[in-house]
Structures are given as structure tokens and as C-alpha cells.
Image (cartoon, rainbow, N blue to C red; front, top):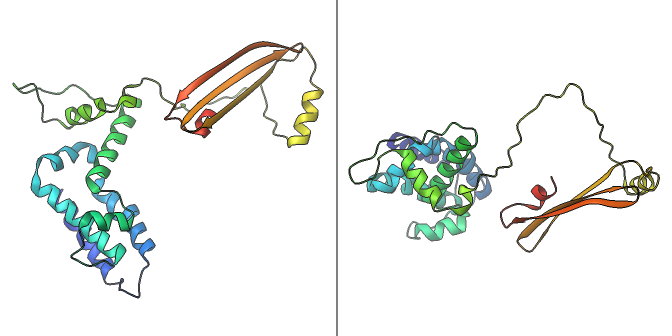
Length: 229
């Protein structure tokens, strides 16, 4: 971890040569380099080691030095400015939270694909030094991560498709609906978001009457695009 941080600080110093108060790479450019190049190289496999940063002060201080150097480069701020203020002005997330977020995403991705190993050794005080134990404790504090429902759709090879997709403009769609024969099954779906609540529903028509209808509340986590998909 220390070597990663040292290398990242060295990369920031290389960028510093091309950044001045009134010239050089723009603040947006420095922020992009930090978020897309330097930070991912530091956070690689953070699901394994992020708990060490929380437990060991010297690691946390070293990572915060990296964040502060980046914030100073982005804002061109004074060295006496507190780190928290620099992060707000630079528009970057506190690195401790960023590490935890990355670890949670990696753990959930491994869980969803069935590659998460939750069998670890416990100490006498019913704790464990395993990274899996640390991440499991964090996940238990987040209600939505205990949900068994996921929206991952596995890839399926279909050689004999029984349907075809036709996307018409508004006028053509209205005209085609009016010409549908009564014995044809018609299924209509829709999803929407009002405030922070999303929902979806569908209805089935045949012979001019509603055969079936159903609506679902999707809670506050789903996006409007997920409710329509």
C-alpha cells in the first residue's frame, strides 16, 4: 500500500511540473487525471486491503497525503487550507469513503457472480482479521445489500428467435394499434419515477378487454431507466 501511494505521489509531482497558477493543465484536466488514472491504480483490489487503512494510522495518513496533494493541484489553493475544504472545492470524494465504496462494489460484484468466499477463521474474541469479515460487517450496515434481488441479466445465445422488434414513430405506432386484430395478444408496459419513488406495471389486452394487469413499487433505489427496462 505504501509503494502504491509513493508511486501515486510521484505521478502527481510529475503533473505538478505542468501546472501553474495561471498556466498549464486546467483544473478539470488534473481532476480527470487523478480520478481516472492515479486513483484507480491506488485503489486496485481495495476490497482486500481497505480495512488495513482503517486500522493503521500511518497508512491512513499516507493516503490522505496523496489526496491533499491532488486537491492542491486541482484547486491551486494555499497550503494552509484544510484538506476538507480543498476536497469540497476540488469536487473530489474523501478518499476513505472512496476506498470503502470501491470495496463494497467489488464485494457485491463477487457475491452476485458466486465468487465470494465467506468462510474465514475467527479469533477467540469472535472477530477476524480477514478482509471478507471486514467487508461483511460493512455490508450488514447497508440494508439494500442484504436484498437477494439483483438486476444482472446473464447473456443468452438465441439461435431461433420467435419474435421480431419493430420500433415505429408516434403516428405509425397509433395507426398500427388501431389495426391490431382482436385475437392478437397486446401487452403494454410502463415505468415511472415520482419524487424518489419508482414503480412499474403492465397490462394485457385481448378481444378488446383487459385480461390481466399488475403494478409494482420498486422503492427508492431503482432508477427511472431500470423501471422501464
